Length: 159
Image (tube, rainbow, N blue to C red; front, side, top):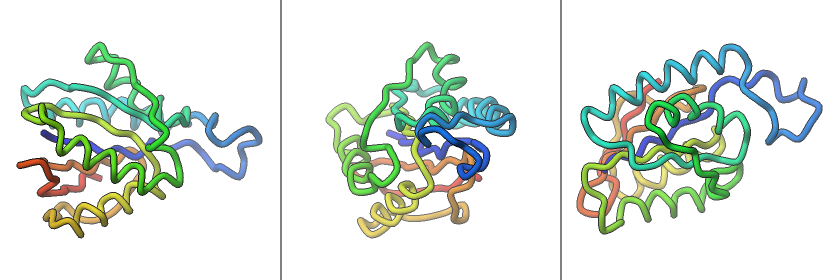
């Protein structure tokens, strides 16, 4: 199994947004990033099925995975464990996916935020996963988690 942790695309300056931050959409750069991200995800699938897409309820996250979902005939499923501030819940979700009985050649996408993803990476590394590809959590970046024997064994960063 592979779990792709995706940070949402660019959504403009949050201090210039007057509504609920969860409703802040992608800006023009973020929309472009979402399209290019779909191409990158397709390249990572290498013939494996995309089993599901889960997203934070934030509009910018749903929009980021929208092109990928559309290409694969999937609807992003919102999950509260992917919202801002939910690092522990997201780590738990990643571990549950890794330990699932049917975790074979599937690929799962999880879209979240910059305050959550680095904590999840820290947690899987402390569990013993290897690390490659640099460090970071740039807009529309991907952390590719490789699962074997019920655990994340490697985390690779794609900027």
